[in-house]
Length: 228
Image 1 (spheres, rainbow, N blue to C red):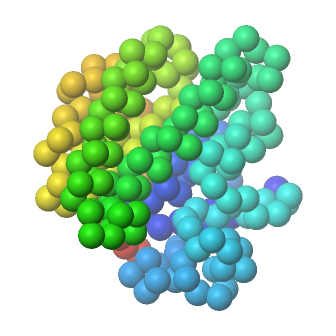
Image 2: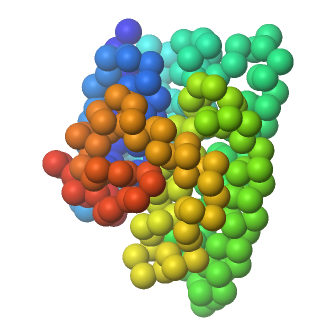
């Protein structure tokens, strides 16, 4: 099976890279050069008409949206990234996956690009959404039932959440004083655990993420492309 991840360093494609590495799957990665706005090119829009990163090409066609790609991988390679459909934990997995993709991730985007969502009121929107995110993280921290989101083994939820926590600490540059990961001990422990895994080491090398990419992140220094 040929799998191709269209990625930009330290973007949402990082989540999919971590999942592919956790699964041990061979895949190609193709840079989408954000500095050149390649995501807006006609060639890339043929793959992802929304102009967003990532896009993931599979024998079933191109998949878009981070949550959808994670769910496809989890179902194609069962009992590694998610509980099986008949497992009693499947419901919890699904409700949190959709919360991360539909609620937390969009809230984070609003803090990054407030002018797109509230022209003329960017600072107000950013402050409001940061407060919302703090509430979300409080609930997530309280819901974690072990060293990983669902207990004793990492799942797609951890792979989705850790990069978002990284971005909260880094972006927008100059507007991150609201965020302190130590406020959420369960999330900090999860990030530290993920940093010890081979999947993270592979992502560090491919995207220049630094020595502690989730628990003490630094701006990426990728070998190719640009994170912004």
